View 1 (cartoon, rainbow, N blue to C red):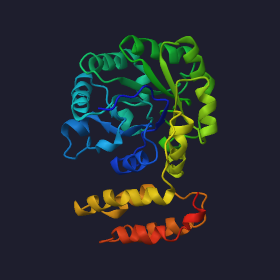
View 2 (spheres, rainbow, N blue to C red; view 1 turned 60 degrees about the vertical axis):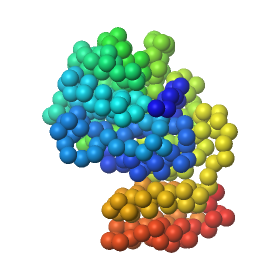
View 3 (tube, rainbow, N blue to C red; view 1 turned 90 degrees about the vertical axis):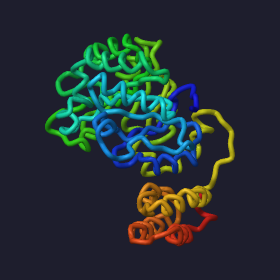
Length: 327
């Protein structure tokens, strides 16, 4: 297991996006960013037939995000995560979708701080890795600062010392999950106030951060920042995170080198019966802003999904981007 000093910079858990292929790709560009799985429900882990917890050793530091509200089920999943070598378990108290609410987890749990505290306590009492919580600043009309602190205080007392705060409230009805990522206004000052009032807690902020300049501004007030969609759409920004955010000097691979470093991983995936598209879809934004980026995306989009598509499709797409201009 890789120990890490903080979640100073992390990549958000994103459903259907941050799978193991995506995370392996990201790790080639940043060795220190904390990566998160997609949210996985306790029911899927305990009763499903898929490999929901698989990952590559290269992905560390890596956190598993769990969705659930049954303390016993969460503990069982947390134990599995620890045994497999995950570095952190994170409880989702931020997802607003109807499906999640019907399962009594996600953002609706903000209204049940005692239950969240019970869940955190059940896990933290029996595993050694950190248990963290990702939450919103409020739900529906319950969006006062006191509502947020009334949630944080018992959960912190139960053993959670790290909170990732998505600086928007969630509307549990009337907005889609996608709209809930954009429509409710951002209020970063709410996260800043939590840090001032609870300096002993580790507080990270998430939501609407689309540059490292913005990330650095938040880090002047907080312990960590979490980026999601911006990283997915422009993944090469990770290439400077270790130096700018963590102060670590290392030779960063060029965009072309990142693609070439993926070849052995892709070949292994294909030899195991996987398809090129499973991996290439996460790489479409690698050349954002470069000459040839559109041609790169088009070639992969039109060919990677075809039966039998192999490494030659990736090589042909890469040849469409002039290496001297892909800086």
